[in-house]
Length: 276
Image (cartoon, rainbow, N blue to C red):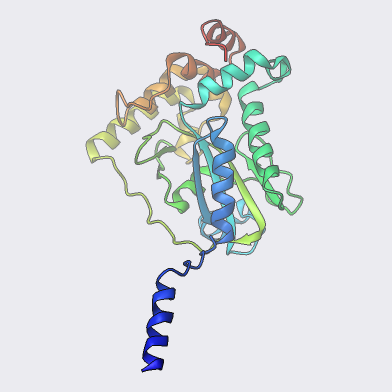
């Protein structure tokens, strides 16, 4: 009888015992902290992946020198970055004096967020050659997005199509964590969202935008920055083609600067930008 009473007492106590705290995996802690840091400056697209998934997609020169299971994080931006960027330009004269203020803004914020993690991390920017010192030439951000299940990559237009943002986001960087393994699930690839008629219209818009450079694109190469700037309105039409009137489309001011990097266009946008 005493034993039964004792067992009942222990069972009653166990009902109120605190549940064990489950620790998040290290890769998830990294991603969440990075997301919190970058949210402060309106950099709002993050997607984790294994280095090996990306390396399977690309040729030897574009492979990341790392073990297949290491954590990589793909970073991008949407139209939300524009107000944060213009506000920073109004506050920071050195940013405005840099060769490419938007690239500089992204680089500063991403590097600061990576440094806040307090662990080894290599950063590969889409606008610059990496300096990882181990032979990797660059990271093909669009191929990384496809491998991570972030977006569908249309080979004919070189557009990445996101399930929410459509074509209206920009891939900016990939972070590689040398001491962190990715142990999470792999997202399925994003399927082609375009019906055949829309895809045909998109590729027709690409041929129109290419103009004299159509031969380059026929070889599968994306247009150079210079080629896009020379015919930027036609390339905006390419981006509009899959889903006209998309709610995440950039503003006219953002489009003008995004496609041309024209300092006069940026200065004009700053005149009407709210100060904060």
